[in-house]
Length: 454
Image 1 (tube, rainbow, N blue to C red):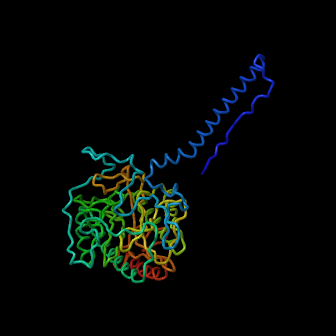
Image 2 (cartoon, rainbow, N blue to C red):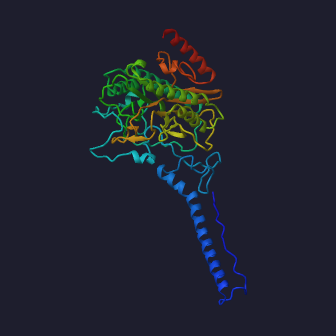
Image 3 (cartoon, one colour):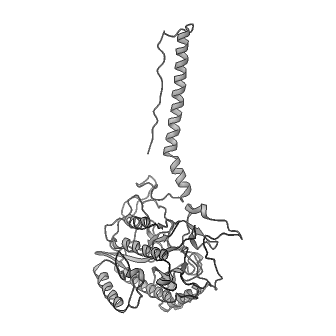
């Protein structure tokens, strides 16, 4: 806003009433001079206060946030340098919130990032272990390879503001990619046990993905060295599989993305080494809260809903329960490209965003922390842990907006396990597959089978 400071000018002394030889009038003249000086000083003070009130907070906040500014501070209307999209609406400015896989934590957390020296200080107890050589994919063994598979550089860049509406043909292929990702994720989760290394899980993911004619999307994406992400305990996201054996009581997020016949399917889930009884009460509460806020946010997805409702729902759910939501990474649109519009913020955004429409496909993947949500980057420039070393949890689905709600393209299938957080959810018990009629019916069938056998 514009704060205008009005000029303050005192009136001159009465004409003819202040002869220089008159002592009393001389005093009056001096008093008028003093008043004028005081008024001028007051004007300067008012101007200074206005500058401090209007400018300093923005500059101060901007020092802690990356450029461009986050939604709270970004202008909500078009500016003179905007270009028009196909729908003739002004192109919105890109806002903060980090990004999905492949985007580092931003300068918002620069105070917690340490220099790359031999005495690097880790935030928690986890340490990097040796890694096996990067696995390779024979292009002839899969239906298609992404454009970054050879040199690590993505060539296709999705729109940063225009959300693609998937065609029926797109949806068919995305369902296939989503199911393949789910099957691989279920396989990876079945291997989680004490003594197993995350490198062994990565090897199984690599083979299972290729067996389905798909390419493991993380592999060589911006030089990422493995075929999946395994984030243990305090790792928020993008953990690199290595030779560390899993320990009883560890919590681990396995993030799977496959590229099948030209389309990506992306999902992740939590697993507990040793099962529910091996986990302390705080850890169970963290996973349960993360799962419930995730399901609660997905339940509201339908045509006409503003995308800012997702982050508000998540933050309003986790904050009263003593947890925090990461702002430096976000969900994303997905399809032929790994990441495209829209950005899905997992925190409150105090401005209108786009509205959901039939055919939109995107991920919701909140990262919820026991303590501080600030990422702390390891020297590999991928692994993002919490700055205080406390644990973090995450879930993710690829979602399709339909006429009557939403469908999880990476939803669970026959044979998928039923986890304790699904059984104990206060939002919706059992496996969640979406809100449209077909999704609800399939969920009832799967949950009936699981509940009967558990």
